[in-house]
Image (cartoon, rainbow, N blue to C red; front, side, top):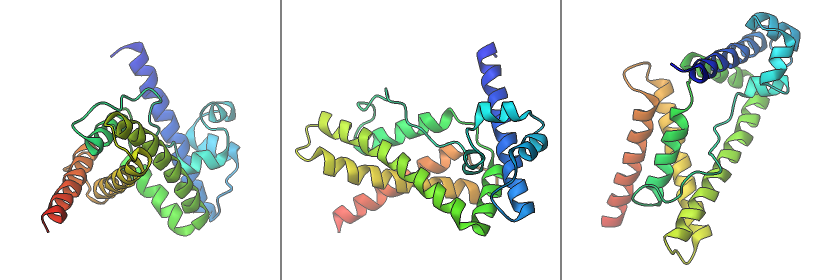
Length: 198
């Protein structure tokens, strides 16, 4: 593995440790205000290192958002939905997700609706990124309503992504996140085909 690859893995491990510490302390304390010093100590990093990764305690609690690159190629894939699935899988492939951390965050969200609300805002931001990508592809495809077509496709893709995510989290082992997302996109296509026949 290259030095760059090792550095990226170390960064992911440190980021995960900080997020886990913040969430564990939130559960133990019963609030979303664990001191940064306590989070850093639990994660075995300095407060300065904490701020190298997260600007605020809230960011550590909410977690790192999924971001679609500005230079993502909207021409990939056989159609609009296929393009969104392909790029989403590329983005997911660049992330090293910790299922236990996701379950821990879900426990905290169940106790604190404010954290759930912040995750909803994050989901909305991801949705907007998908809409921009989908509009670009719809324009390339020559659609006379690229904004409307792009928005519909992006919202369908967002639903498939969320369903794939939930499927992966709820099924311990036996399936990768990529496999789960591919399965939910396949189900969407089956539903669309069935609806078209009916």
